[in-house]
Length: 185
Image 1: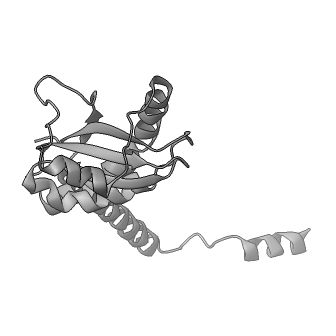
Image 2 (image 1 turned 180 degrees about the vertical axis):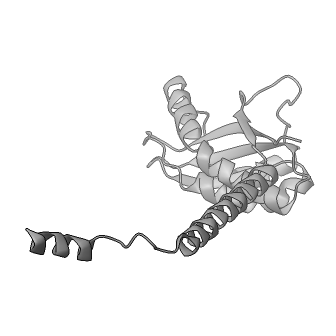
């Protein structure tokens, strides 16, 4: 029995272990954790402070304050010769176009957020988007008109809209919609 007690004493820690060293290590770990928390908190505050939550909305294509401009008589024959006649979408196509636009909003929002990081003055704007859709459902052409300040944003938006796929139709058609860009001030 005496041999078992001697073996146990070898595995037990001596009673006179210096606690100063272990207390110092614990204090250092606590300080390191607090510094890490402070850094993460500070970085998260910066990113949310800089990021402006944009609001994208698409309204009906025709609004009373924005009537569609009539082409001038001289420009009409040139436009007709350059592009084939494109028709307005049917009621069923309008529903699917609205769904595709709704599904494509995250890409447009990402473009707008990147533009806001570069230029914080882009808080209010309205772009009119005209999408030519081929019979296959693929986007054939995207044209945007809007304020000059938003011109740098247009290539990104056009790339995003060009990725959209619409349902196939019997013939090509055109969809128009306004894109209202509004960030928090």
